[in-house]
Image (tube, rainbow, N blue to C red):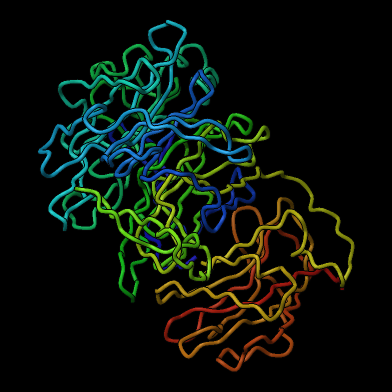
Length: 590
């Protein structure tokens, strides 16, 4: 990762020291995600499953009727009725068998903004299905915030109020409190903790705690406040409320730290403490047009992955996914994946664009029937409002489906401005001795079935080029910044012996495509990447444009073990990026 992009990373949780009666954690400087519960994690470079829908956000829950319930912002949802700032929907099926959606309600029938409707729209932030009244059927509780829509220079940049609306008929009709439940930009982006179908896995917290609905909240805004109207969120907060009292504001209790007897809860919202604080700013050195100084805590989702017994918070910045894990709802939380898609423009699904305006919202890109479809370099795109629907988690917990949206910065194709999914894989660390892979100069460990590419960013989303055996193709790491380090490599699910990598360069350009200095090899051991010893590069790498294109360099070193390997160094050229065609990995045992 780009070391210049990261400020302080503060992870606060149950193990934090007490300061002034509240938990605080010492700052941790992090240039990239550290090791921990997961040994490796990977998500697709673009959405791979799309649906006939339009809109964004899409928080989800899994109800007693085995359907997924969700709400979108600024779109039609699953239907051809008029667009609205908020739409309730339900989804049947799975990504593997096919998804079928239905629009249930929209607009004022769900919620109205409590703030000035000329300047604010209601937007969904979280949803939960739970039987709170004991009638044997789930009610749906949908968290809705007032999100600024005007003036244009401040749109989407502050959220002063939030409330929870309720449906007792699985989403067709909704009941909204007369007054907002949360005000003054405090806890106004609410994300309910997803404990699975009808919150069934809440019982893992024990009988005393299982009768509650848990919700996370952000202050000020749902993501970076680019206009500075309010501070950007840097703390994630936790609350809980009895299942039969979700709409009763005075029943909510907020996490205020943990002591010898466990979590402390307070009725006073001003006494709440963050379970996670992350003050990093990304893309501070962006040199092209685009958003910069990105905060990393945003509206996403929190899933309890029951097979792995782990809590996952899926967040994002404008150009990255930022994923955290914890052993308990209150932490301690740890960053385990930062997936960097580079600055926009991105590449979408094949198709051409026309724009259908949404009053007070986004312009919705839609295909023009019968028009030719231009070629895309990708697809490659990140997105926002990342969630992991619990219904789509595999039996072993290692395969999930990530939902996220994207609508702007389009170079070609169609963005995933709909309910769309991509695969997300995450594997727990298994401590023990490294696998005994016998010396075999012909066995390319980069072609093993459990290998996952890692890089600062893949400009065109072609991480598969690194180990496909084709030396004539090229990927590069251009991201619009003057980054100080660059890397290409892999992680495995278990440790391997290695002592040689072969780097074949990709295309070079007038403004970059090579390492300018300090090309070296690192292996990942325990919690970090460490340099190998005895490195020899053959032929000598020139550290300038003459390094390529499509030339192979063998980097040999003393035998060592790790669950990951990468080449790294300072990128060259005025645009500060490198290129690659192939990265082979071997253990010769010499």
